[in-house]
Amino acid sequence: MPAHRVVALVLPPQSSFELACAAEVFGVGRPGLPSRYAFGVCAERPGSVPTLAGYDMTVGEGLEALETADTVVIPGWQRPEEAASPQVIAALRRAHERGARLVAICSGAFLLAQTGLLDGRRATTHWRMAADLAARFPEVEVDLDVLYVDLGDLATSAGTAAGVDLCLHLVRADHGASYAAQVARHMVMPPHREGGQLQYAVPPASERPSESLAPVLDWAAERLHERLDLDALAVRAGVSARTLARRFAEQLGVSPGRWLLAQRVAAARALLEETDLPVETIATRVGLSSAANLRRRFHRALRTTPAAYRRSFGR
Image (cartoon, rainbow, N blue to C red):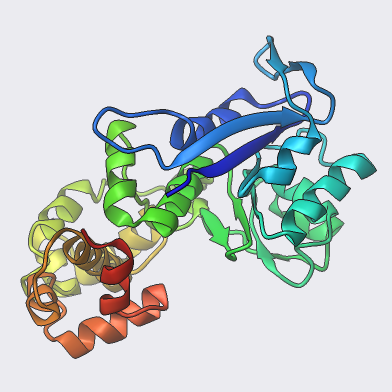
C-alpha cells in the first residue's frame, strides 16, 4: 500500500506547536509500527519562515507540493483578520478539487473559510475565536463545543492539543482504531478524548468541578461487560446520581450514558480488529447485550456495520 502523503502548509509566523501536532502523528517513525504516511512541509515562498517561538525554519518546497498531497494540513493562521494571498487560496482549492483532504488546526479554520469551501458546512476553532469566525464567515456553521469536526473532505479542530485529537482521529479513520491506539500509546496520549472543548474554558470559580471523575471512569472501563448505568456509577463514586451527571457535564461535556456507549463501541472496534470472535460474543463482552444492539449502535456511531468494519480493519 503506497504511503498516504500529508503536506503541511506553513504560514509566517508559524505556530511551532500546531505544526508539531501534525508532524508527530503523521511524520514520526515508530519501532514495530509500519509507517502509513509520508510527511512533508511547504510554504508559499520556500526558504526561511519565522515561527512564534522565536526561531526560523527552513522550508524547501513551495505550493507545488500540494499538487501531490493526499491530505493538506493548515497548522494555524496567525493573521485571521488578513486575507491570504490569491495563490494560497487557489492552491488549496485545486488540492480539494482533485480529492485531497484539507485539515485546519485551530486558527487554520480562518484560512480554510477564506477558500469558501466551508460555506454551508460545520467547522470549529479555538473557543476564544469561535465568535469571531462566525462573525467573519456567516455562511459557516461554527460549532463551539467540539474538539474537532470531520466532514470527510474537510476537517477542523479546536485549539492547540485538539490538533492532536483530530490527527489521531484521522489515523483511526484511515487505518482503524488499533493502529491509531498504537500511535497514541507511543505518544503517551489517550487515543480518544471525550466531550467538547468548553470543558477547558475557564468557568467562574463557583462553577468549577470539585472532584475528578478519573477513578470512576477507570473502574467502569474495566467492567463494560457488566450492567452499568448512572445509578451504579453514582454508587461507586459515592455521590448522588444528579451530582454525578453534573460532574460528567462539567468535566467531559457528555452524559454518563453517552460516555458508556462510546467506551463500549470503542471496545467493540478493538475486538473486531484484533480477534475473530463472533459479533454476538463481542456484544456480550462490551455490554451491548446482543448482536442486533451492537449493529444498531455501531451503525449509528460509525455509519458502517461490524462486518464491514472488520473487513476493512481486521487482522
